[in-house]
Length: 548
Ligand code: F6P
Image (cartoon, rainbow, N blue to C red; front, side):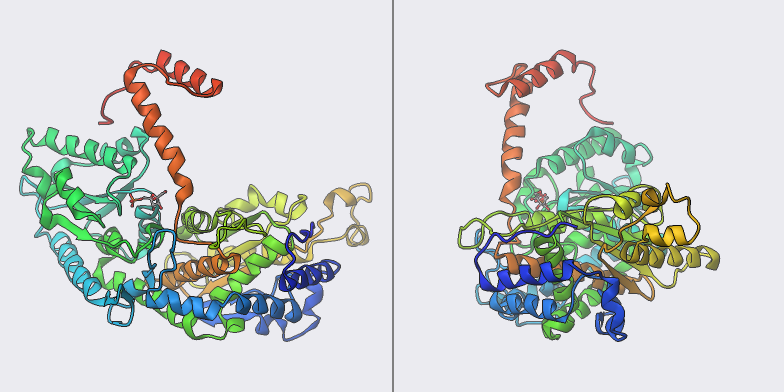
């Protein structure tokens, strides 16, 4: 296991490197000589049980991490977040996703104005839309009831809603089917529309900016599909399109009726927006009361985050464990492994949340960040991944911290399946920690020449997050847990977790290349890009103009 070397002269950081060197000489399982460790390193919050006892961390190292958190004024920064302070200074914005799940709160303000009234008004309107669609009052242009809803959005306007709709599949009302199209790859919209009837399909164009090219092109293709069905009668657009955006005028200019637009706001970050009207597909899938339960679960985690002492605060300790592994033990990645089919989209969602938020290299004071920031977040569901990448975790050369997740009860699984799932989840975290030595293998009668090949070093750290059941409330709490983890890490790294300037350049270049494709010849580029463009231009004939 590599221990990172110091890259800063800050005494608190130096002290943490010293703890890392000390602890790296020992083993995680050795820390369990303390019989109280499992209890002491488990935090119950908002229906979740967060066990971080299988980390290579002891009380002195944890205290040093907490000292760093205090030195970064974490408690004050948490209050700032909840009250609507400008936690996103490069864009001059608050990040009030917590206010979205606490609509009765009138303390959170932006520019001195409480945001509660706008949130409540939007929720009232969202509820009306949901009731109209689910009760069959919303009719297609030809008078047919809506049976299918397609969300057109990408990034934060897609990943969160898609994850929640998929994860809560057992509590869908069944009144409508909800689908998602995000990729500009025409195969994505084609895959969804080929199974649907335009007469009974409602599109939601979800885009905070309403300028995202992928979403705009998918919306144009969807419009063309509707108009083709209704003999180019543009009145059909009002019956088949709804928009959610912080720029309603842009949606209207696009052709969506003004009363078919729900607002969101600049003070909600895209990747933190599933709690806003961007959550409309969720409310359509599980009903408005289910959506409220999701918000309530997140609100319970918010209350815990805001009030629990840092050492007993689940998001804070989750963040500090991650920081410890990344910055002081040298891990470059972080694996997310839910033992639950319903959470199969969680790694994708957390990739955007953590990597778009904290994939930064400059501090708020415009200095180079002295320590590494966001690790690569990746993962997959158990038990499948045990037969894929777990070999590398058990015997590879890299430190790979893992977060395991599990619901103790499952609404559909027969007991034999669930017992086996649970046994595997717990077995993997144990095996990653304890490993097995060649001496133990030999003592157990293994072929001595193979013992070295079968040896597993162990000492791989993991967290285990369990909940009694996966419900809208516990899912809300789980997502809020990771949102706050991300925020805490950003505070400790002294970066802005709420901007994403790094995505700009690629977007600009894509627009330029698109113009060049339209013109039929590449502009001035590096040799590689020019050759690739030429190759594409020489071979692109035969592509359909619209996916459908
Ligand atoms: O990837 C950049 C980004 O701006 C994300 O932050 C955002 O979630 C996504 O694009 C979609 O943006 P919009 O909701 O404005 O279409």
